Length: 398
Image 1: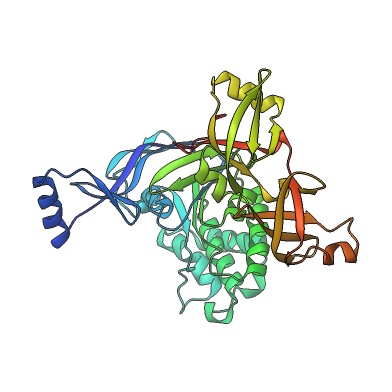
Image 2: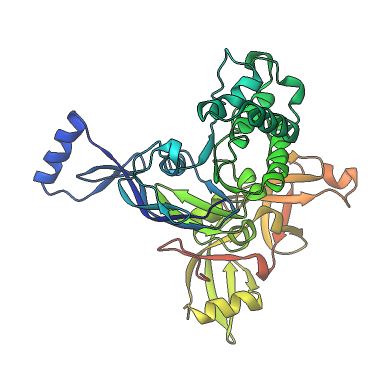
């Protein structure tokens, strides 16, 4: 097993053809660097990953998460050796591997599209890499059958991939990686081709697998539910930059900026134009006529940063808002019944706000009353408020 160290990793895709001419022209005119399609454009090329720094401990499960085009898969491919590192250093254990071929890095990668050989059986697919290493037949047999048992695919060893379901094919792809007993497992959105039910099942299987083989994992996904349930730590990316690194609980409870706050959590966090005020030495947030004093923990963080009174962006998660007799007045636009809860989309002074209301202690009549056009009031407490700078979008408690 192995630790990994990514130091100032950068990926630049050089220009070619007309792009190169345009870049030279831009340089000649001395125009500033600009962004195009969320990626930074420089005279060297398009920068896909920027100054990526991360220390991964031995046997840690790291999840890279972010929207499409944020650089997470490119980062994973640089670790695998499938993409050249433009700048920076990559260590697996104590070994610098920038110029080491993929086959010599002792890593195994599971792809989104399974990448199985259609003419081979499950057994042959799983054994293929070991055969290339000239591993003894009895050792190959033991490794394949042991991996098949872990993944519960023993009964499919004689089948071809076309005779398997999507979930079964993905297990075979994972099994092919397991038999190699690599130092590091790399997984590039392995569940994105599966339906919702299968994704949930396979997510649980990956958690069990991690407990069984206990090696270092780097997992890429755009699904924040996968990130929150699988990762020891999450690396949240946007436009090639790391936005925040932390445990699932840390990034949920203490998002570093507006992007992280909006990306982590479902439904998405509500954002309000509000004011941070101070009275009798205590911080409070004022949303129109509604004022809430912040919790002691938040008071201490803001005081430590010597934060002044100012206009802010206030963030409150839908599940942390409650219907109340008094508070912020609103009118229900849409009511979505989700079984154990109702998701209310309400209009509060022209602002769309989502509220998650538990139905556990409500009667049928009370639930029915939460319909289009109904007037309600909502409130929230000071311990669930997230206070962001209007100018920078950074959490003022950070």
